[in-house]
Amino acid sequence: MSTDKDIIILAKSKKFNNYCIAGYDVNNCEMVRIISNNPRIHFSVQGKDMILSNTGIEAELLDVVRLKARKVEPFKDNPHQVENWEYDNRVKWMKLKSITFSEIPQGCISKEELLFFNTKPILNKQDMSLIRNGFRSLQFIKPDFLEFYIKEFEGRFKIYSNLSWNRQIYKKLSLTDLHFVNIMEEMHKKFESKFFFITPNPLLLVSLSGIFELDLCYYKLIASIINGKDWKVRTKNNLFYSNLKQPIPNKVS
Image (cartoon, rainbow, N blue to C red; front, top):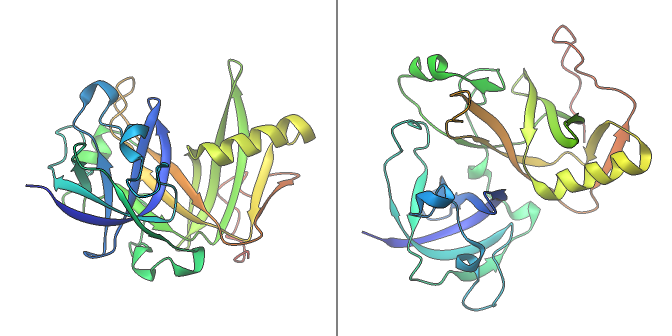
């Protein structure tokens, strides 16, 4: 049975030429992932379904939208995706308001000790089989330290991140926020730099992916970077986390 969901959109990343949408239910104070019922597009959300009834444009980050959705159980291979809600594409989404960076509720911020169960960038089937409770696939965090680097594979660029959070180090997390991917690719071409950081320090919506069919693994993805005012992407000369033996740096602004 579908119900009204009022959601702050915290991630709008590309998925199979459509969107992966995640956010925070302001009424139930819980993280949610909005999915379709269409397996041909890997249950992603089509842009046409995100056209807001009262504005005529697609919903964007930090919009608070009302939609109809029903809770669905995780798929067998993805038991961690407990936040899934399937939206009703017969009912138009409606914008209630937009909020600013400073208005993001503190309840959004993850209170877990670890970013998806361990400090590795990828979980394999064995890792997942060892998890007995506390399944989750979305965490909204403010890292203590954050840096990015670019790698080229067969003529294509990929952006990775190293970060520290809760006194733990996480390396080689893939960035899938296309806005920032594009910015860093352009800066790489212009300045021939491979290393980047963002100031002031942003918030991150991190997602644990569904199982990847080629290697049967689950990837920790930075699906969204959310900033306040006057943010900048800057280049740097090298990575701080070139190895795991280095100390965790002081928090950056």
